[in-house]
Image 1 (cartoon, rainbow, N blue to C red):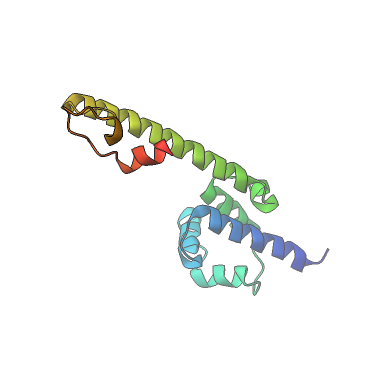
Image 2: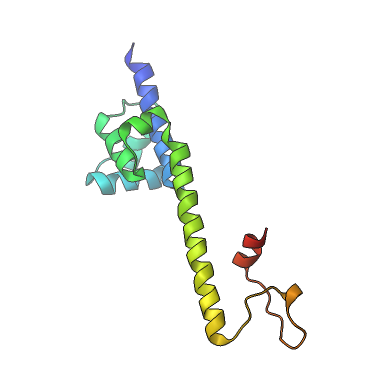
Length: 138
């Protein structure tokens, strides 16, 4: 196999890492790589890598994998994107659950009912559900 197909796999892996990182641009991702690697790459070097103008060095794949918290093998194979997405979803659901319980405690401490406005008793003022509550009710 010639160098070009291998370099294309490395380019694809860098672009995958950039997408997984949540970086807004190639420049932002290059900065993250440089912070992790201690100086390199520059934004222009990263641009040359992802446009195929230069060969992606092996160390860059290792740093990119570190930045997004996966192995180089997962990064190159592309099999980790579902696992990263599922992990993110689990963390968000856990955070929402913790926030919901904190909201319940706060409402109890200030004497507000934990119910939506449709089921509020006529003697008690209705409390409009928060955005999180409305999303959880769906």
